[in-house]
Length: 300
Image (tube, rainbow, N blue to C red; front, side, top):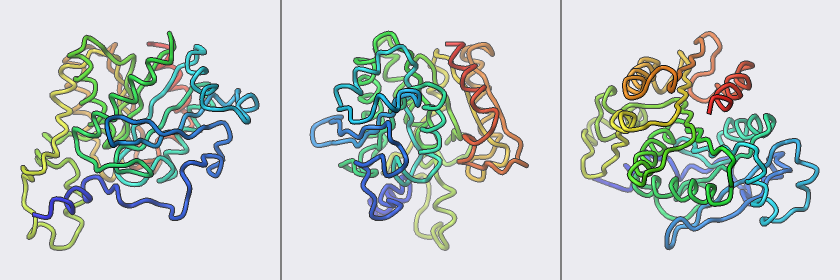
């Protein structure tokens, strides 16, 4: 029933806040060392992408063109690719810009795309489509980053996209340099095998009477557990104990799976006390986060 409505409820990609903003102008979001670009992940799909250079390069970045920004990706500073959660754009909710500024302040490059159908990217979101977009962005960065580390920071929906992409790369004999999974979900533990965002549906009065699991015809799967069993790159799991969307036990279960597949040296987990009020989106403001990130990058 109503596959387009279900698609929207899963990805909430049509909600583009704040209104009347121009994503092609990152300076409007106090990102004056960032360039906007559009990349074609496949025929007919244009992805809006921001590239922010390390904060210590902001003066040099003034007035520079896309060619200059691309050339900096191989300057030896680690490159983070940030795959965001469902809903909104690369500019909103505000924690996405907050993460970008944090990483830039630490001396890292940040490449932040909007998946197809999100923000000013074209197309409609599907699991396969988002995975294709993630793989394209990763390969685009790797082709320009030389010997620089390329680290993935994935949040919420982005964690499912990232583990899907990781398994695709493994089949090609490639591993990510390192992966951060923040607010990761697990469809198996949450017992809704075809829809990792059942909390969104069940908050809508009467939804359970109109839409019944398993949503099989829409194929929202994101098999994170099975993916983690195959991954061999270093992984850092970040989760708040008061996460209002994904319970902490979900993250603990994912950690156990990943450790079993690798070991406790390759897989780390950092939790944040619920009294801090970070919930699902606020981990980036923790005062310990810079040290956590630097330690993880140094271990790669």
